[in-house]
Image (tube, rainbow, N blue to C red):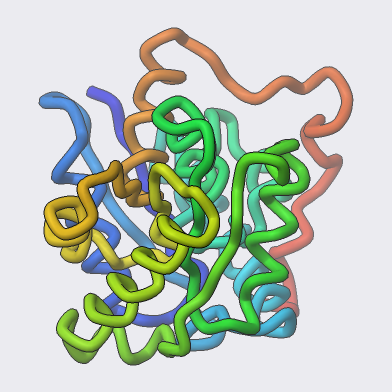
Length: 240
């Protein structure tokens, strides 16, 4: 039995439930999918300060997961908060929802756009797009909706994403859309119908990508960049 754990860098229980449901909806039969959230991080990751505390929360979750015998992890935050450090700590593979979504979109369309939220998080998405070498194929846009608003209902969020998606299809020549926030799975089917192009949810993309790595018996390379650290930085007084 394969055990996949979805890591939520923030403290929101509602967001954790949403990303867990998204992962379970696409997981293979026989895969156990669980989720965890940070204990001492912000309620949402929308700033660089939030990212720092969220990344520390991801490391704490990985340490718990290793004790629980988890086989692999999905980082469920757009911008892939704490991903490189998580790869150093985890025995199995760790897949970030941003990397997975962008790579999935690149297989489906020549040009595509990420629609993230709120606008100040564009830089976080830009970082991942640049690191993957996809700046020539990907445009990053944003809607002025806070992460907290997602938890209050999909109606306003759907309208905002649909409007911005139509703009990028027309203005940027996008042929697919990536939803740039965790917890947006409920918008996918409606947006696909409304837009007529592929709409990629990062948690779903990361879950299926992780299962593929595990099925092949693949784990993170330890030869250099993501070699296991000598000691754990998350134990001791930092966590109280």
